Image 1 (cartoon, rainbow, N blue to C red):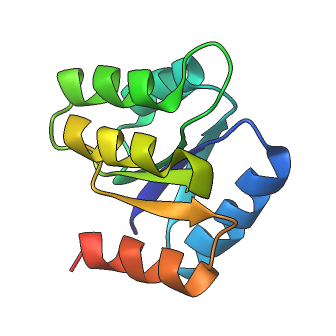
Image 2: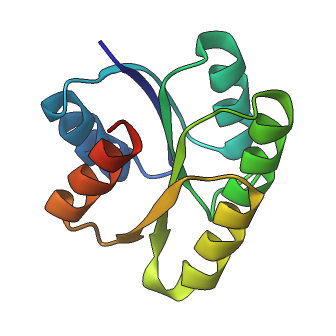
Length: 119
């Protein structure tokens, strides 16, 4: 079974992502509400996938991606971003994230992008 960590400061968004990932057959090992916690959870669990918001307190998603990729270059990270932050999502891909999904999420597009990483 594939594993995942969800990093988003919105409880509502984390719940949607949990259900979506579980529908895809992932076991969600942990959730984090900021990029620093996300990095720590990645380090602890080393999951197959991380979903990462960009705009979060403490440490934003871009900085968290930098830290994760620096220590774990094969990490699979999918950015979850509002349309207004699309340029930042492209920046995250340049830092090593595999893809991005716009908020509000189209769940079918989200599922397809995640499946494509593992096919």
